[in-house]
Every structure is written in structure tokens, then in C-alpha cells.
Image (cartoon, rainbow, N blue to C red; front, side, top):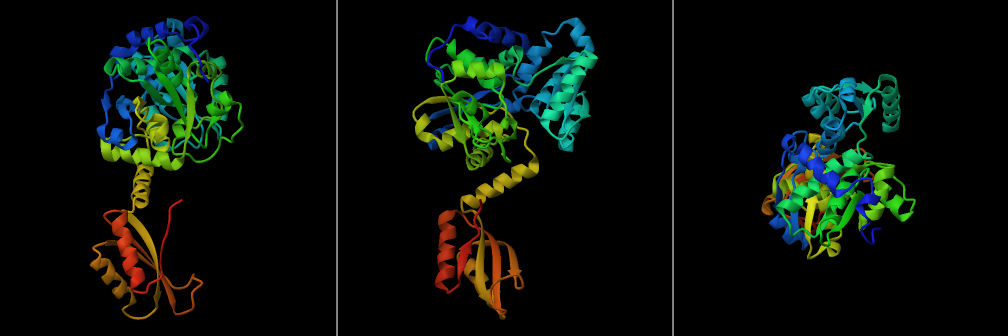
Length: 413
């Protein structure tokens, strides 16, 4: 990882590029706030400032790099239009600003892209083409169309203009909070952290730059550390689930970034839930990765003044509901208890009385008589319930056991 800052001229993006990008785009994007979270600071042992990029019009920082690229196109390139391969925030950011500037845009997406993402992108004025079953297939088709129709391909991260645009995030953070001494930044392809690290190294003081990847997709970690961990799985942080980081960004990360940490799915879920409960803000899994790092590696960041980018807020509502319910279950506020009963009148009533005595609310009751290894007169009952906290739930379980009921908790993964 980075040991010293190389000359700006040795890298494809300089601080002057990022400053020029900021001057270019600042009037056409949201100047999102950078605010301290006192509660998260107390929880993590660091001073935590959050940059609310989920408040951009398309709910993600990707607008910055897309707009910076569009504004540098020639008149001829503008007339022919732009193309990208993306099923996420890059598609919407590029489509929105291209439409605003009167530039035709085409977005190639895999055929299995959720309908809501296709609709949102088309709503920003783009022509959407569904091609292939994977991102790689969509990407290959986009490059074919680029050559056939003379479009300008706008890469989601591996482009100096895009990197400079993303780096404007750090300029605003340091203008708002000059005391930040550590950036904790999600890494997918590496565009955001490359731009932010460029700003950090030009700050005239030591600012540590730490990248964060989901442990299921440690692609940049592999590239920088010469490891070969697998990149696969259903991660909540789909926005940074990149199997191959960029060539440009890999070089910049190697030169400028101090460290990369990996975070678990459980930490990502907890971070999404905490941001909604504490900050009252909706953040997607990738956008919560910075906070997940503080949760999972508290000793690494204790005592530091940290800037975290909430880089996106586009999360499916059903997925968000699932994350919140799972977090309630892990905290003991929701639980499913499996209670063994005798199949006779009054059995369920007597169990329910204990719930009443302990003031625990019953939400659902599931009887299982047939598909069980118990004798024919045996009965398993799963009871979903709501407690105040883990201690309250533990008191209920103790009361059930004391009354002679075999009771187990159905645990989450």
C-alpha cells in the first residue's frame, strides 16, 4: 500500500484535475452536507462525520463523475451520444445529466436487471438495451455499439474524468470539516477512493485513506495484496460487488491508499439499520460500507476524526425491510421461539399465559404436528414474539423453561 505520495504528475489524475472538475460541476449537483453523528461517534469510539451523497438527485455520488465527463465532450461527441453498461447508480447518474444537457444516452443492462431499475433509467431519458445474462455480456455489447454507432463510452470508474469528478466529494468534505484526518471509503471499481485519495494527498497534512470492500468481493484487496480470495456471493453491498477493479484505479490505489479492510454481511446489515434508526437516512449496502468498517474494526479507527461517504441510497424497499427485521431479531427485540408441547387441550393457552406474565407480545403462532420427529402426541409450536430487548427475551425463555417447556431460539444466519 501507499508509503509516500508520488508526484501528482506521475498519476493520471491530479489535484488540479479534481479542482477543475469541482468548478465544472458544482452548480449542477447537490452540495450534500457533511454532518457529525454524535451517537455513532459514541458507539465507535471515533469522531464520525457523514457525507450524505444519498441526497443527490439520483441518490448517489456517481452523478459527479458522469457529469464531469459529459461536460468535457466535444460538440460532435455530444451529438452522437454516450453509452454505458450499468444496472446501478452509474446508469441513472449518466442518464439524468445527459438528458439534462440534451445528449442522447444509451444504457446496456443484463436481461435479468430488476424492472424498477430499467424503468428508473428510462425515466431519466435513456434508451435501455437489455443484452446478456451477466454484466460482462452487457459490457461487451456496449463496446460493440460504441464502435458501430460512434457513441462515447463512459466507464463507471476506470476513466480519469470520472475519477476527478468523484474526487470532488473529498473537496467538499474537507471544506466543511477541515479537521478530518481519515477517509473511510467504499471500493468497488475504485473510482471514488482514487479521487478522494488524490485530494487527501494534496491537503498539506497527513490524512489516512482507508478503503472498504465486502468480504465476498475483495477484488481490489486481491489486486493490491497479491491474494486470490474468491469474489462471489449474494452481498448486500451490490454496488461494490466488482470482480475486476480498473487498471487506472488499481495503480492509483496502490500509490495513494493506506489500507483496505474487509467487512462481513452482518456488519453491512447492521450499518444500514443503524443509519436508518439513528440518522433517519436510507442507505444502500455499498453506501453503508464505511460505517460497517467502523463497526467491525473499532480498534483500527478509535480516536480518529473520520469522514465517511454515504455513497448511495438506492436499496430495494423489500430488501430494506428484511434487513431491518433481521437486525431487530439479532438485538433480541424480535424472536422465534420453538416450544415443545403435549397435544392436549389448554397446552397453547398455558404457554400464552407465560408470555402475558412477562409482557412479551405474540406476533405469529405456527403449529407443527405432522412433519416432526416427535411422537404422534408431540407438538412443536413456533412463536414469533416481540420483546423490549435481549434481557427481556432472556427472562421470557427462563420463565418458559422453569415452567417445564423445552424451548429453543430459531437463530438467524
